[in-house]
Structures are given as C-alpha cells and as structure tokens.
Length: 274
Image (cartoon, rainbow, N blue to C red):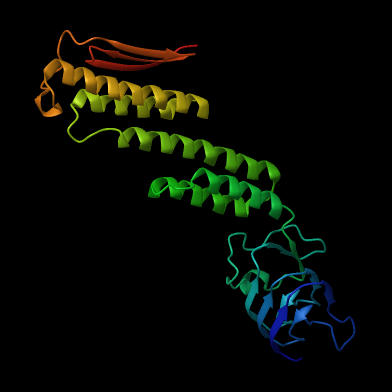
C-alpha cells in the first residue's frame, strides 16, 4: 500500500510488473502500491515494459492511488493501453518536461522505447539547416522551424521524407522571392517593381525548385534590363524617368519551357508553356 517519489531511470532493459498475490495485486508496475501514489518519475532512457495490477497504472499510482510529474525524454516513444502490446501513443507533442501522468492514469500496460528513426530525422533536420545557412529572414527561418518540429513528431520514414522535401522546396521558393524583392530599389519605377510582382506569382506556381531558380534568374536579369531601359529613355537617374518611353528596346530572355518577356518595358509577362 506504499507510496513513492523521485524515481529516475537512465537506461537499460526494464520489465516491471505488479505482483499477483495479495501483497502486489493492485500495485503499479513502476510506482505506488495498492492505494499508493507516486510522484517525480523521470525516464531519461532505456527500453521499458511496465504492467500494472488490477485497476493500477503501468507507471504511476496503484489502485485508488495517483501519479504525478511523470516525464520521459523526447527521443523515446511512449505507448499505453488497457491490453498487452499497446499501440496508442501517449502525448505525441510532449516535451522532455511535459507531465504525462494524466495520460498514463489507469493505463495498465506501458511501453517506452527509443524512436527507431532518430538518425533519419537527424539527417533530415541537417539538410533543412543547411538550406537556411546564413539566412536572416524570419519567415524563411519559420518554415524551417515548423518543418523540423513536424519531423520530430513524424512516425514513419515516408512522413519524414515528405515533410523534408516540402520544406526544402518552400525554402527555395521563399529565398528566391526574397532575393528578387531585395533587388528592387525604392526609387525604381512601378513598372520595374512589377517584375518582382510577376516573378513572385510565377515562382509560387512553379512545379519544381529548378523552375523556381530559373524564373529567379530571369527576373533578376529583367529587373536590371528594365531599370537600364528606363534610365536610357528618360535620363541618367531613376528620379527623372517619368513614364516608360515608347522607343525603349524590348528585352526578351528565355530558356527551356520558361520565358520572361519585358515589352518596351511597359509590360512584363512570365509565361510557362508545355
């Protein structure tokens, strides 16, 4: 009927089960005896199977007892249920300091083991970190942060790779748009700025990262050409440009299936053809 507190498990293979006689029936696998409670159970590692007695928790309080402040390192998966070999994962979004006692309460069977995909997740996160190296744009960093969190909670290789692939594509897109926006000067004519607007639309519609980079390259060239054409037609400084000149030369650049055409340079089109 005893209670307990301050149990720390750092590793090893642990199989803990309640007793089956009158002295152990109703006790937790790891925690309080029948009618007993237990607090401050910390699991930093190891592979654990804990089975509670009748109406007792696998980890926590015994029958009519309670558990509190039970934490498990985030690199481990916790499953609990009312039958052996539980499949329900507990507190999937927990941190290493999240108290999961309420999630384990009354769950007789608990299994805790290291996430089998830790190395794959670490490699995916490393790829994402490499993609944002040197980036200071908060919106791009947020894409990476969200993806890394989702990877941590993913439970299949397919999900890990899917999250990583989408994040890398989103980062390429966001970086391209940021680079184009950075190329626009505050004193540029609205038609020069329109290049960035059209480029962003085309980039967001692009199907591959290669297309994104192609459009970005053409857009940066078009911005420079448009600016030069305006200056040539209206004066030596952008402040003197006024409206687009009628006789400014057209600029056209194209490669593969993606074309960017700058007309006179009054009109900018980003056109994708099959």
